[in-house]
Amino acid sequence: MNSTDSRDWGQGGGAGPGRLLRAGPARALSFTAAALFCLVIVLYPQLLVRHGGPPNHGALVLGLIGMAAGFVHGVGFEPRRPLFRILLGPLSAWLLLPLGTWLLLT
Image 1 (cartoon, rainbow, N blue to C red):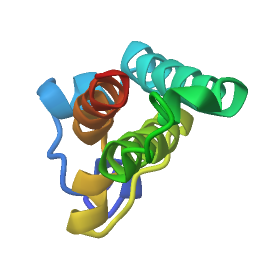
Image 2: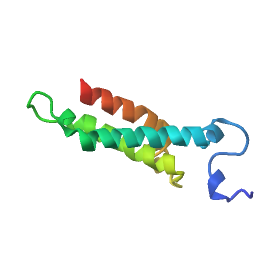
Image 3: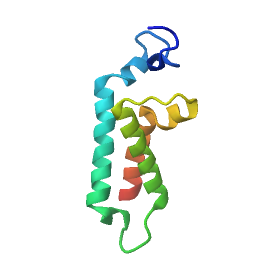
Image 4: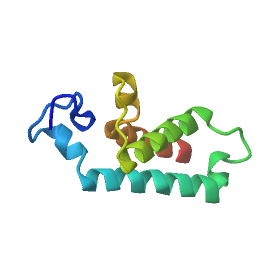
């Protein structure tokens, strides 16, 4: 593998945390969490409206960005631009999905 290989772009070789985040179990976790969030929102949209009030759009946006990041990481896509690598990476998914879900449920 040469230094311009897109799979190693910005990660640096070796057995660091970047390799663990690209491993199968991490991708499966991201994809499963995103799919569960998606199914809950699609099958039970009443969660978005509590007690007849307006929906919490901020919490929904956080959850949806986390869901998108989970799907992007889960299928194995790695954006090249640093901003999108962070926004659509596994850490964003793992932080935003639970945060959005918690804010929607409280």
